[in-house]
Length: 124
Length: 268
Image (tube, rainbow over all chains, first blue to last red; front, side, top):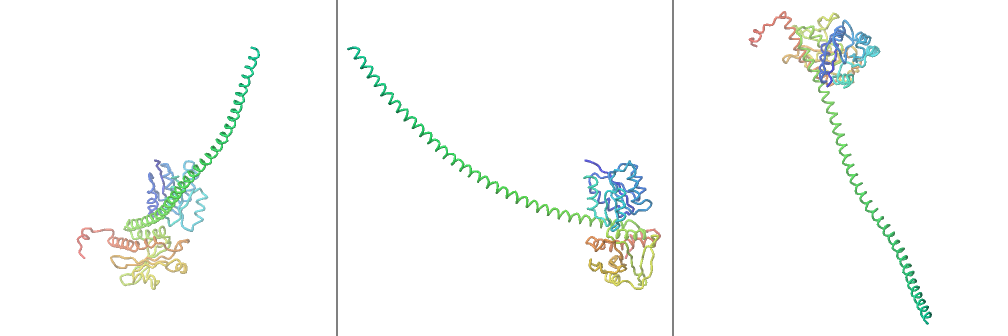
């Protein structure tokens, strides 16, 4: 059975816990967490990931910058990215998609939606 | 004489042969007629048999068709049952997913609220829960102080909690403080509220007493109403946020020092 590695980049512990809680329902899934874009990039450089889930509004390095850096690095350019946006923040969402994000989830998020999107991105 | 007698004898034998030959010819004619009659009869019988065989085959096919029709009906009935079961499972799955989502939200709310002893952290967690799990991006806490004055706690731009005395509060906040009832408007009522009006008021309970109210002032742009999950979160916040605030305040008052021994032995 395939093993999947997912990186969750989110500054809010509440949101991070909710995302991890939902993703843990997928079997053989290993989750790494980071609190901002810089932490996310460090984790990315240390190991290979099958999916990156990132918030947009974060301190130090936001999600848009992270999406841009991932897409411009040949090493990670094929990793699917899901961004988490605030309801109504269509501008952020559109920018993230234009920068190369594959999907988006809006807040307040539902565990079923996280699962659905993650499974779709991982091809499960 | 002998010649004449021989000639008569030959003649007589020829006549005899002719008679035999004629009889033979007649017999052959009869045989041919009989043969023709029999062949005709054979044809008749063959046609009759073929017609009878076709009728039997048709009956067999009709019987088989009826069986197939019955089988088809049974299969269609089974498909109908399976489809109904499938729909039922889909509904049950959706219900379980909703329950799972609710439990996840409640678990995380509780977990996060009790993950810190810092007052400002408790406030931050409350705001985060309301923003990320409910969709409310502006809230405030109201408490009665020792002189029964209503004080409002807000987070300033630096993320530090501040308090100010409030002269008059919203009647819904007063009601939540005095009656201890959650006030949540329905979607229609919510749509009619002013931008600055309270959108929800949640009493904070500790040990059977209302110690304050959590008021929501602003919702995210596309949040048009409160769901059942929101109500559950409000109910849980009412109990657990109050306890988390009290615990954090008490600990802060004791400069982070907790005397477990005194606490365990204390009599009420």
